[in-house]
Length: 114
Length: 118
Image 1: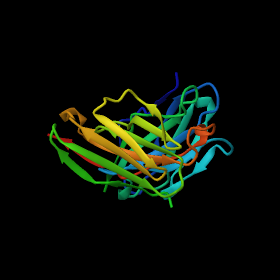
Image 2: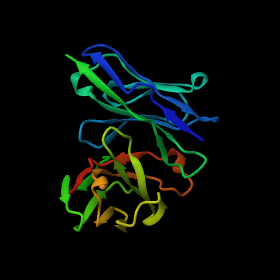
Image 3: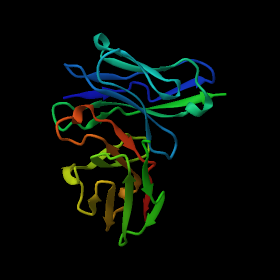
């Protein structure tokens, strides 16, 4: 069965520092992958997605993610974080062998130090 | 424009009340979704409507009743809820529906309704 793992429950980063959030998936073929962000008490906002093509994907708010098939990873990066980036980040993969619904990672909470 | 709207933002109800959550999108999307999200957890899928027909029901208790009056609107009717049903209820929509191209569909979420059951 497909799965998504976000190994870090919390990550603390200083404002202005670079960020990398990890996401690992399990699936034999090319997965369809998403990163969403959720600010406290808010809905989920799509940051970026990967279906095929260039493995480095650019998203909104200065985020990018790189699909690495050899490592089964789709890590999210940002070169310089802002205090407003403090939020919960979810990685998700499309469930291909069933109903095309999303399988979600547990989420990573990003904390920004001033 | 990728806006999904939800009303109300907050709802407090007793276990004997009947209430409804509303969701609206005007992007011409053919699929609409209800999710339940508990604190510090990812969203859990409840229902999916594709082309205004209920296509997925993830074994949700009958005290939750979805309705899709037209392609732009999605309701969730609530009756005799339990305190453990307190959560953030999220609506989402996607362009293609489940008719063949669901794998590359992208879901867009509303801001959610924070439900508290007393």
